[in-house]
Length: 363
Ligand code: ADP
Image (cartoon, rainbow, N blue to C red; front, side, top):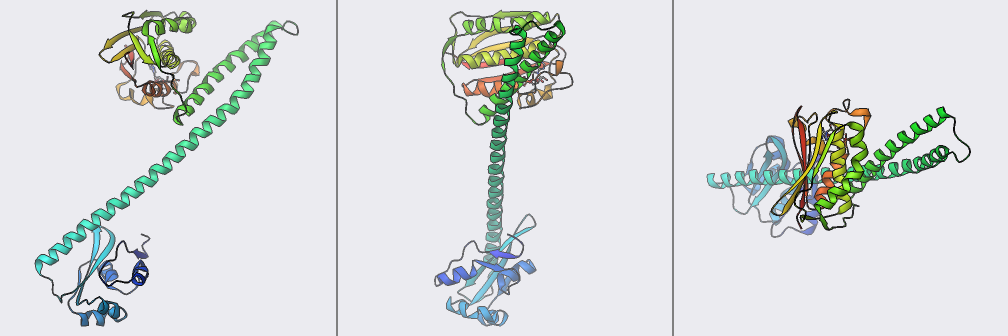
């Protein structure tokens, strides 16, 4: 494993003692023995008689005699040009080997090398995955702690700014009221961002609980209206909701569905120019209800349609209006959809618009 020693994976033969197993479990690659010879010469080593063996490796003659061995062979184990070890056999009959026996041991060495190499790759992959999982957990913990620590002073800022704006200690001069207003909106924006990071960290560490119930789709969509009204009016965009079959119900967590739809509508409004349209429609196909948020906005390039669901990915952050968002909304929304047994997918045509579909189990 380290280029200096060989570690025995197995050592078996009738007559091999426990002491010998321990002795041979690890040996230096510079030690004189036939296994190392096979490694050094990178070829099959054949010793046909006990006498020849004893002459080559006198210090090993006694244990070979104890095994009643008359011949010995050792082969390097190679896979893809990489030396992974060697294999040795004490033989009860004197050599030379027949051609078919030689072929047999060579192909056995080949298979053994493959198996060892696969085991090594598997172990390496397993170790890398464990490490990555640990790093990911550390990242989520870090995000959770940092966002929590940021949230607390922000709440204090909100409290004091609100106090100033209410004029509890006398009215603010107009200019200061304007400053306070700006602090208030910057603070609101920061709280939004931090809440998203906290939500994401919670999803990552699987701390999100789902409160699943049966809800009317029409009612869910109705609940959305007051939540997006302000943004719709501010953008001068036509906003349409078609609730479809009034009896249609889904099995889901109400708050999370609204959170997902809110995110989808907010995105559509964000990436659609004035005079455009955003529509929320729904239909049922067998066991799933799909709720679609369609817009006539700038669209998403085809090769980015999947990556926008990854955390912190934005198609072009320089184009994001007012520097809003950090690219967490869709990652959170998809995780939430999946957490409820649903799915979130997107189709889009660049320059014409996008359609995000939330699939939920029908009830
Ligand atoms: P954010 O909106 O905070 O950047 P999201 O995860 O919600 O993060 O969205 C990721 C990216 O996907 C956005 O930055 C934007 O580039 C793209 N995107 C999302 N929704 C739309 C949409 N309706 N139209 C065009 N691009 C969109």
